[in-house]
Amino acid sequence: MTLSKIVWHDASGGSNVGWRDISELKQITAAVAVSCGMIIHEDDDLIIICPHMLIEDGKAIQGDAEIAIPKAWVISNEKLLAFPPGD
Image 1 (cartoon, helix red, strand yellow):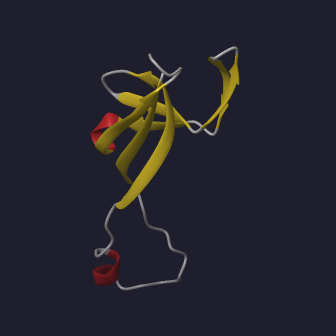
Image 2 (cartoon, one colour):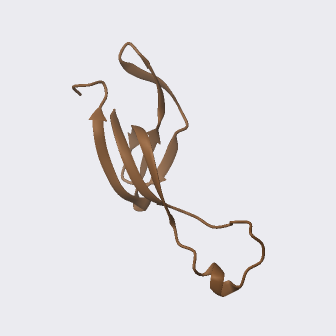
């Protein structure tokens, strides 16, 4: 597995500030998000990254707080290091 930093576009909006003019609503842009963690799955369409992993005997056995990011939303994917070290 690889520890990575993924920068990606995310949906935004719904700021719950009440009724606003349509011209103001049209000013919204996509958010830019950053996620760091172990890539536990990757295919042509999707990256699943998990920031919290339990390690046993040098192997990741459980994870928590995973997120599935569509590859079309990914701006960059920086490999930080391999796990276990040397992989």
